[in-house]
Length: 426
Ligand SMILES: *Cc1c(COP(=O)(O)O)cnc(C)c1O
Image (cartoon, rainbow, N blue to C red; front, side, top):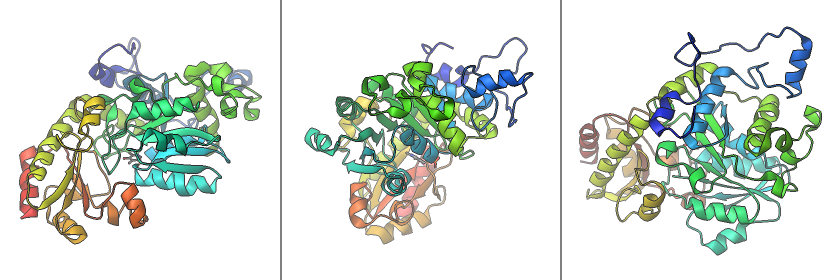
């Protein structure tokens, strides 16, 4: 389906167009394997000479249809689903960052991704330099090294809710001949499409708003198709030189700029590492996608009301929500997220860590959960949970203070959430 349709139409129809008499809903192809009449036909698939399905660790029609829907929403040329948001971020990086390479990343990112870059990928021989999302041009420039292979950030950071100046990070990345990879989980393509601002690759934890119901873990990587790997071929040998594990094919030659990155990720990394999304989970994810454009504005309007209520409350020390005039990210939010940001509000309860924990235990409508961005309101104290492995200095760099409560507005009535907060603060 053409990408020129509106976002709502893409949410419900893109990526799957049934023929006459075929299932209206994307079918769940619950099969590990596919049948062929001749060994030769199958051999051509293995050599990537023909396209087709042969084993669901590499590709599956259900997950492909859902990936194509997300690609259409982001305005990308190709996409791949993964088992989780973490595997999306790992494969997005590992597709271009190898042993001996270097990443420049915003320090204000999801705790799991922070560990991935600073601990796990370090053990694999890749290094990371973290920069503040608010760094100056000079500071950003100073973070680059000759072996830098990508720049990474989150549109709206989880949990600090900093908003990234995507254009600025993209222009520095491009000046150094490397792509900008943006985790767009919190904004979703309904509120921001990073490709329109110069980002090259987008990742998602689809476990959040895209699924939207706390039902299915998943991730996605989308390629804009715009980054010219061949113009910097010496930096990206994996894409621009022969792949010995595929009889010497060169991804950029075989699949063009619009397909090289995702084809390498599926046919090489998925083949060898295997964190696939199951067709069943892709089906659940797709049910969520079909209402994404209806749900996201509601999450945002509720969060705006909650943020305004908290901001005026005497027991609340501070509120971070870029929809609040006066918020540090209000202006940058108006630029990148003019229709709303996300349903997550973070705030500090007066009285420090202990009062933050007390407040949370008194909530009745909102539940304490290690999750965000689904239909049911939930909250979390990152300093003692998702970010507990960080020291005080790292917490500050990640924008996570000790009394920070991350409050994720679900789809309940806003008045019920506000009276719940009122009684818990009282
Ligand atoms: C949750 C989250 C992840 C990790 O996703 P999982 O699906 O839990 O693996 C990555 N990035 C962001 C911004 C997230 O919120």
